[in-house]
Image 1 (cartoon, chains in turn purple, green, orange, blue):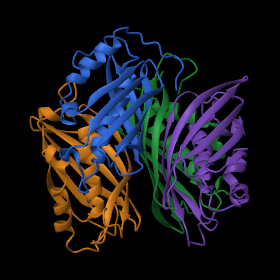
Image 2: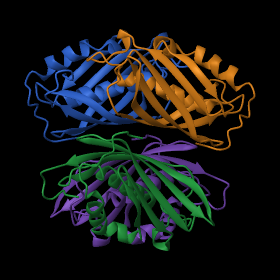
Image 3: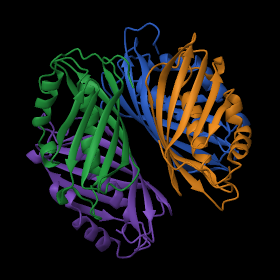
Image 4: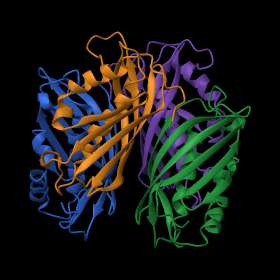
Length: 152
Length: 152
Length: 152
Length: 152
């Protein structure tokens, strides 16, 4: 993990939480921001029928949507107050079926940068109390400044 | 694109459509299977507030969920009748904000295989009648046979 | 492929060829710049024992090294005269063993941008006159300006 | 990291070292197998002019070639005696220029499997005694059995 994780924006938490609240997709996922710290964001969500693939597991795309957000918000904690964050690309490996009652998506900044930030994500399924790593992600994010339509 | 695209399962279309209908996530996305051919699947969906990120564009995770399904079903068309398909991994590059009223996700098999199939996906946003490439994906899929809980 | 491929630097070909000539790695690969056009670069190389993996095929890492360069030079053709290009990340799918006497690596810009460019690469093996797609790549590249140690 | 890392082949170290010795590419890189343990492989190499890009840093493709091998051999330690390993795909993020006199590539199995293994790699540059993370990789590998031309 990166060693220089002093957020330039002291109000990063309020900023990130406000952005999270504006995402229709996070409400659809039933997702909450369970943890937020400089360079780190954790998103929690429960199983829902509306998020499943054909075998009743959490759809890989839904795992990815929540994990991508955790990676993006982890990056956002280290960005200036007036910056927005865009995902340039991500790669996800699905290690096991996302079988469980609840899910935890952890995003952590691996390498912060002025323009480009790289985050890593880990998705865990909690199934009858036992926890399992079900997916891993690497995401590349870009800091956007000076564009009114891309903020927070 | 691949040159040996003769589906071993003549009833591939019915099989894929039945699988699609069982996915809670596809209903949440408002997605329909717009096109299906050997080695190819196209998924269409309209914009919905419930699928947005903080700027009102389609959430990258939702783009990915639909695109991943298009890649997976493209692969599935070339699999045996009793096989299931699992996404091992995918990589998505988000080329432009997914701004539009409707979206079309194209999945095509690049390299079919007995165990491993590689598909490519392209996501297009249709905004006031003009169409734009907004994302590109490469997905690796695995054929699963003999496991009752992983079928279709 | 992208539709706005007018290079801002009319001398892009000389600039790219000079950069290619400075790469020790390209000489080690025995690589030549077989083709260069706005948004496109093709690298050719012969089989060599010194580039093999344990089965005598071209090592995947060597395939990737040449393909990454093709993607980067394709991007470079569309950059300003004083800019350098850095690979942020790439993803490669190895579709078949790289068995052959000669290899051709094609890089093409999918989406040019002021800061970020996305290129796609295809690696072909030429084996006894027949050609086969052996790998596909997506690469994200960054335009760097104003840094003396990162040019061309 | 994975918790079930008992190698089915007690002679895994000899097998992996013999395979390493057969790779022309590893000799070209000047690479040595610095460390080998169940689920883990470390490759070391010195800077060489013949491995550079245009700014004199280690070429990203050469970083990737060595890192891919570390990931593959980490996976190989957990495979049966008669199995071969194939890289299906990998993704690399280049976090910083590979500037240094020596380089260390660490590969570790994240998720072993009968058919599919996922490894993670980290590349470090050692520059005047200080060490820096310069690249991170996720690789998907496949166990191949029963094919004479794909062994070890």
